Image 1 (cartoon, rainbow over the protein chains, first blue to last red):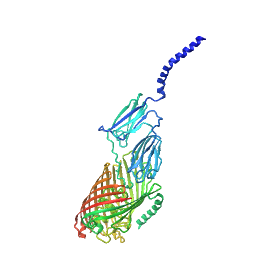
Image 2: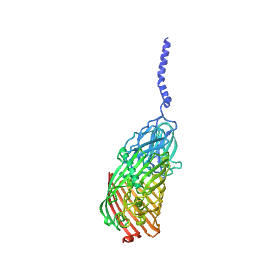
Image 3: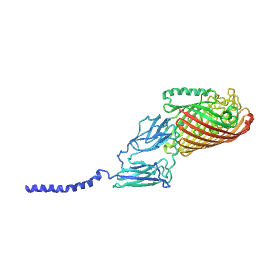
Image 4: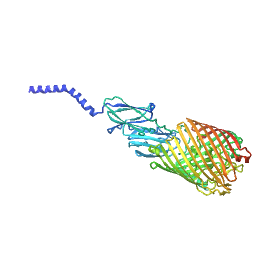
Length: 239
Length: 400
């Protein structure tokens, strides 16, 4: 009986001794499967044929495995100033909304017949409508039915990892988990041999190091000539 | 009378729309000028000078007051009415230059139809795209667009079909235009009598051109009768590339019977046929380059006097912020090729303009226009056929 008790005590004592080691082992084995690997940043630079940075390029890192991360859903704004959509390019995550105020002194009539989102906003000035929900991925082209030169683009993506290149042609996408991605570059003025879109594969290993990717365009962007200047009080007739 | 009825009907239709939709579409403005002009007496005052002002009409003056309306009904029918009161007088103190309704539905896919009915300008000018058919570039329009403003008005209907390729990611938007119209039988009179001119006085729908009973252009009334057959037509096409380039062509034939004569207007019916082509190019956001060409002929009885005419211009405009500088060169010619009333006109003009927007309601413009021309018919009013005319204008424009 005493032997049996001492044996139980010895087992407890040895269990206590291995517990910390077991805990470390469990953490090492189980944690990678329970939480994402340490997130990485991806820096994308886009250069024209003269090695100058290209601003305004839409850059999207889309995980090859579908993601349920909706952390980038938001309400964006596309204003109308001097007969232009401002900004004229937006990139948003599926489920986001876009507000379309009209800051011009003339009325606009915003519409889209793109497959990803069809909508119409009847003639208006100021801020008359609630934000429009974009719940399907795809490229949405918006226009004004009164002023045909007004063209805006809304790139709707399922990925939460996106941005646009800055004045130096650079954008950093933050917090991407390890895994395989497709990098997509898009701009309406891009006219590469493959069209307005470039793709590249990207694999991020666990460890959180910053990945870098350089894209060199073979042709400069077509200039955006929609700007009609800023003589704000001039009243345009319709197109 | 028909034109009067159409305009009246449009105003009656538009009136309840004003009440429903509010009057946010009204704009009013006033145009004050200081003018220093040299050359012959203006055709507007009984002479055959080709500019709006002459030495007898130099100095500070009220130029005009304008009133523009733009309204809509059920979102897809739009109404436009532009009225002006010229300080140098007309038949009525306030008169319309345009009044029309446009059905402009949302696009069906990549296609969109438009239908205009009323009195409006044919799609010829690349200069006059501001409300009221005014120009943002110069005070005086090109020779081509001056003539369009003087003698051409579509009083009828116009149908446009647009292919909105840019909405599908293409670089181009394409369109075709077709129109049937009446009440334009006298179009061509001014070109044959006076030749080409440069100014910004749009003829009103019920108004007149020139001083009644004086000189060659003796207060001609332009839009009062549909006495010469017809209806006339025009067909055209246009292409727009990415917002940096727009091209248009148009063929116009008023299908007038030149043997007709209107005692009420004291004018013959002029069979006028012409082609027009033009383009606007914006190589950078600050620069705009515009060029237009128009050429054709016009004939009227008795004895079927016929005149061939053509003109072209090149305009370059630079804008930064509220400042705009514009230079334009116009070349033009007209000559008779049959009938007993020989006339010949040839010349060119340089126009330099600076405009500044002081604020959203006030702008100033300074313009120097030099026109060198020969016109055979000037001998009938005792003036030399060859003439160099200068016109320096300072304009102050205020708008609500």
